[in-house]
Each structure stands twice: as structure tokens, then as C-alpha cells.
Image: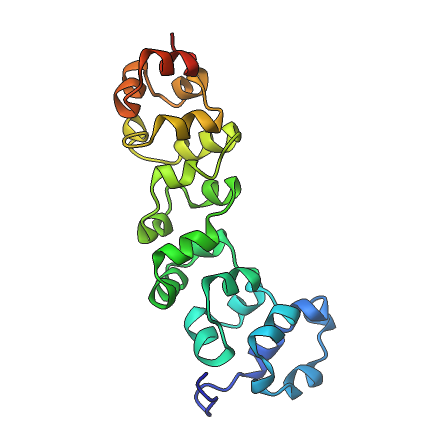
Length: 207
């Protein structure tokens, strides 16, 4: 880690923001106690125990600062600090710094792990930055047809949103003909984009 200097030292406001979680709210943080905590005390393990992503973001601590001064080593460290998919969607700078440190694939592996993550990331600039495909999003939605439909609703152009997606991935989500038609996908759209056989189309409820 890079030692703190007069230019990188944490301000009183930053320390209060970092410790907001452990204080139970801004009005409950002991100002003198927060200010008295040395910069060197804010190690990665300390932050995991006493802070969270929302507090760290409020303090202006993104991936690069957390890496250079607080011991951040992996994308999973970010998740353990309680950053999640919404942080990728709301902050392009956060995404850029994370990619610079760990590469897109490691970020995707850490942050795209549930149907909710897929819904949050679908159609976002973050998904574009990270190269997240429709297949990757739907693979997080096995048996989660509602979330899978919501993912597809956010993709444009809708008529070609299944291009290149394996039939098995769509089938595993539980999406069937009625939901796909409600999304504006026709029999021919689905047949052509998924490369479906007649039997596969039957399984989806089209024939």
C-alpha cells in the first residue's frame, strides 16, 4: 500500500462517512472518536467490519483509492465491502477503476451472481463497459422467469435480443411462448435467433 501523505490523508468528513455504519447514523457517530482514528487504522479488514459500500462511496473512496491506501486486492473484496451491482450501474468511474485494477471478467464474476444482479445490469452502460452478454445475464436466471423477462425488457432492439443465446439458457429460465410474445418476440424471431428445432419450439409452447 502507498503511505498516506498530506495530499492523501483522510479528512474529518471522510472519516465520519466511513464510520457512519458503525455509528448507527450520522447523529450517533462520535465526532472526536472518528477524527482520532488514524488513517493507517482504516485497513481492508477494518473497513469490512466497520463500514460499507454506501459509506465508502460517500467518503469518495473508489476502487483505486481502496487499492492504493487500504489494501483492496480483489474484486471479491469490493463485494465484501458491500458494493454491489447497483454501484456499477450508478457510477461509470467506479466501473472504470475496477476494470483497470482487476479486468472486466473478474468484475463480472464477482458482481453478476444472481437474478437480481442480472436485472440491475441489463441494458446499462456498465454492462456495455464490462462486455456482459445477454447469455451471461440469462444464465443467472435459472427458474427465474419473471427476472429473465425483466432482463429482456431492458434490451434494445427487443426484436433481436435473443440473437446468439443458446436455446438451453432460455429454456432453463422458465420463459415460455406467452412471455416471449408479450415481449414482442414472434414465432419466427425465436425460431431464427435461437436456431430452434420443432421439438424445442414445442417445449417453449409455440407449437
